[in-house]
Image 1 (cartoon, rainbow, N blue to C red):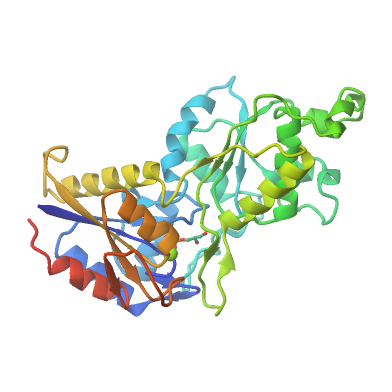
Image 2: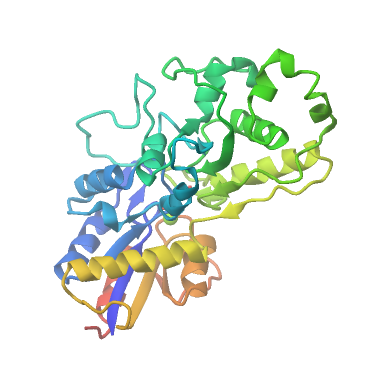
Length: 357
Ligand code: G3P
Ligand code: MG
């Protein structure tokens, strides 16, 4: 049987601003053994190509964009509904100017920061084919009264609000929970028509909105990851995208007198992401010339991760073999993983010691 591996990133290959030395050795060993692999992360906020380039640099390896499964990568097919000149816009949530990207080796350029308001979240959306991706900060620049508690970024340009927002996609951790929660609730209450929020002549027509009503059909809302916490260099875990979602659910329900927020989840531990990751591993196998018959040749997929709720639950629920490491979120206690190891290099030992083609 052939084998394939999905490496988690935060807490497995990288911790805070530090690339784990075991990670460099582990990746080198699977490359030398010609084992197909992907990097499967609930992080994102950039293009697969940019993340592959940066990880290739910090891990001193050649990692291709097609091996990157970011939290939002499996959302790409959604773009088909928002890809032509007459399509609605989509709101892309995620840190527009500071996508957290952890490495210690100096980078040649200051990635993720832009004086022109260019956003890597937006680059990713455009690369997937979304015709009109809009950022929350662009909405704030267009109408600062929407969230009047801080000055909008000078790097963003105002946008036209004529085009309706047809969907909200959270690509990465919110940079500003208050701004994002407010804008999402505004979009939900106006069916994606921001003119009804910002233009004074809409005041009478929107009066009923102040009575906490929402349209019967809720605007589609997609989250790329549900992790409640993630782990960096600090001793206590940091809030992740799932924590923002809990906060949003609470304020939305309070605002609508108990209406539940409806949304669709992507990322680990969800099946859509594991299906995508399997295809990416299979494609890597083909590119390594290991197989030309991917669909019929059975494969044992291994998922290495530090977060029991996403990495281990996801691997177990999707028929993969789970390996939990102790270099990230998990420290001790009961767990559901098939293997518990110290770090990613030990995980690779376990995998390569198994019989495989
Ligand atoms: O937001 C959580 C994210 O940083 C976790 O990333 O690589 O551990 O799936 P990862
Ligand atoms: Mg992790």
